[in-house]
Image (cartoon, rainbow, N blue to C red; front, top):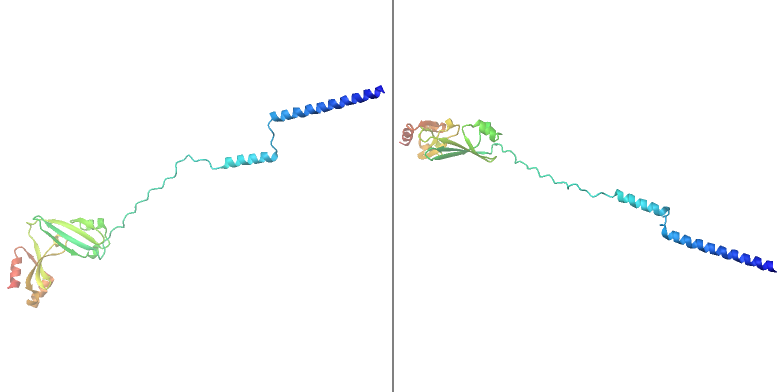
Length: 212
């Protein structure tokens, strides 16, 4: 009887000891888990790595200066050229203040020239304006120098023109007389149509002859 009691008592102590050991081990594991960070599983590790890679691949903030827009290149106007429609204005500036001018179309040898080409061809003239529509040429003339004239026809009457051929220009109108060309003989009409050269001394005599 005594040995059975002893056996039961011993067994009970063993069971209690095992329960105590298990409880102590459980408490120890809980404390260790609280002190040590949890190790992420494989899926979590992969997610973190992917996020880090996306962050590293993000476009970096540029520190370079923004590109500047180039300034527009100015366009030059088309170069003016002399054409058959261009008006050539010849102006004669006399020393006494008188200005005579005539307007005509350019001769064939000036067609297609630009400003520099015209200046080379008419070196004795000053070009004060040059466009494709109109060109103004000036020349200074001594008013005291002897003049050359051409007696011709203008508007059906005897007219006097300045002979500007020495200056490289065309005749310019000086005056229109009241002498009707149709009242003159055919021979005189032909001479006037061709043009009669005159100077300061001969001009009055010619006009007197046709007016008498």
